[in-house]
Amino acid sequence: MSVPARRDRPGPKPGEVQSMSLQGGRRKSPASLFILAAVTALAGPARGEVPPCEGTYEYFSGKSFANVAPGNALPDAGRIAQAYNNREGWVGQIIRKPQSEGLFEVEVNQCGREFVISQGGKSMVFLQSATNGTTYVAQNIDIEGGELTMRVLGHKNFVGKIEGVTHGFKYTFPVAMEPRDTSMPDLEGCHDDAVASSDTFAHEKTATRGFLAARGMTPRAEFAPGDYFRVLETDRDLAGASRDGSTRHIRFRMGRNNAILPEIGMREICLAEPGKLDPPRRLLSFKIFRVEKPDGYLVFAQEIDIETGKILGQAEGESIGREAAALQAAMTDAATALEANGTVIGHLSDGMMP
Image 1 (spheres, helix red, strand yellow):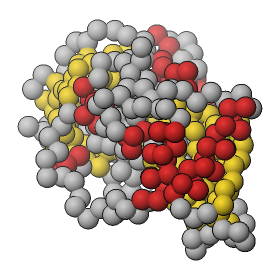
Image 2: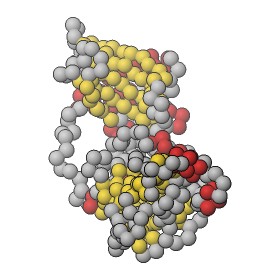
Image 3: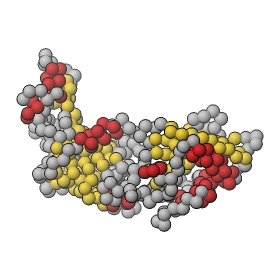
Image 4: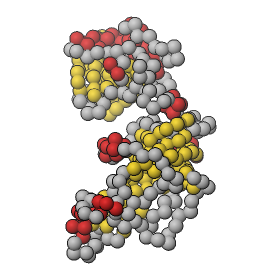
């Protein structure tokens, strides 16, 4: 179904918008999407962001920009690019403004390594980048010397850009897709069976389940206690860390009113109505260190703002012993001290906005 690439015409001149529209579409201001694109351009890939959900998306084109390419011999090339970027004079009248390009259908194939967008009987194939799993590259874009890339964010949003060189100018043209009606793609048989043993962090998991139970934090009926936290291990970030120079962390995601969010799976994300999922705003993190003489645990509890990475509160707890109950006791002490300093630890929620 894919549209074959054409190589019989040059790419767009500065100011010429390469539209993806094959049918008319309703207008909508996409400003927030392109702010999102700018913010995420510098961010590294986050675990669990891909593959995308299937379904209907609205495609937006943004405000294009031009810069002088190396080797451009025009004496006024810099001024031409400036006039174009500022939309000066008649240029501002003929260049299309950021707009909706209509509704497109997204189909996911190859266990998420490929997706296809289609509109009006025509389609475009995107393949997953070999160097960044969240980035996909269009394979049949109809622009000489240009490339279209899309990044998948949280399974349901796409931000990207068309960029290339033409007539001595480098051009950048942001694009984005926003979900309208999505569903879970067919990923049967796509999961890797060679996963790490679930017992790797058994000690920490036992302690954390006990921590929740002792505080009377009961999960919603459709969730288990283990759905509300993740245990991970990082390289040493404090002198004296044990386990061959590693540090273990137990992390909870917190949403509205610091309610503890479950680790929602891709199926729930794809099926959720727009605006219904409670986005994580803060982290409740327990950083665990084993100490000696006597053997025990030192635990740092932190409240962290996700957007800025700022530590909003920190407290510590300690205990004697190596059993899970000892780790639970240190976590409890640290959490109690953190709350005394003003941090609110909310209830276990269902992950949805009220």
